[in-house]
Image 1 (cartoon, helix red, strand yellow):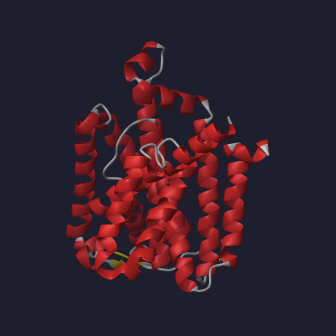
Image 2: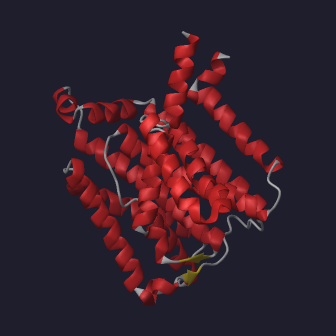
Length: 314
């Protein structure tokens, strides 16, 4: 029983079981498409949670990194004939380098100044993707060739599901190991108090830049894979709305909770689908549900439920 209560063992085992058993209840291609979308969103949120939940650094432009990954891989394969796997790697490296360069000046800011800076970065990237129509296709978007790796090409939603599910499991495993390492302890120290962390010898700038870059690379990888999955992309993938949606997913599931980020992504992806039957009241009910969770569960869904279970056991 203790095995199941440990995130690195039980949590990963439960996630693997859910990924393995979920296809048994998915009836058609649309259901698989929703599951794949949940996987994509969850991976982005796992990286963003490292930045917001553990390092305490807000980002309101994270969808821009998803867009850079999507367009980087899309342009390299469609316009320059690159191998898809090499294009994914190049897009991730390029996004990581950009994140590394902009992180140092941006992360010197705090509070709402930091939020505005990341928002500005996201808006700039979204504008560039819109206006550089000779490269990106502009607002009309662009077609992306199919994905292949070492001669294998996912041919249907079921195969894409296993690819994304495996990527999600690896992302969670990497995040949990990073959190349990000295880097994770340094991030929690930065979140608690940057001044106190620096007093005890923590290079706060180094760790903030590091985790910003890691979260950007994860987002870029998701963008690249989602571009190949949909085989069509538009600048909307880097929109401000998508950035806010990622933040809400992290907060809803529970900040500083890796599995909370996955749960938040799943709920916020599924909820609009479930509320479509309400037609004109869909957005009203959706907003009321989010407000209710934030009012009565300010720590997020998973940490609150875990806390209730702990208190009952005592």
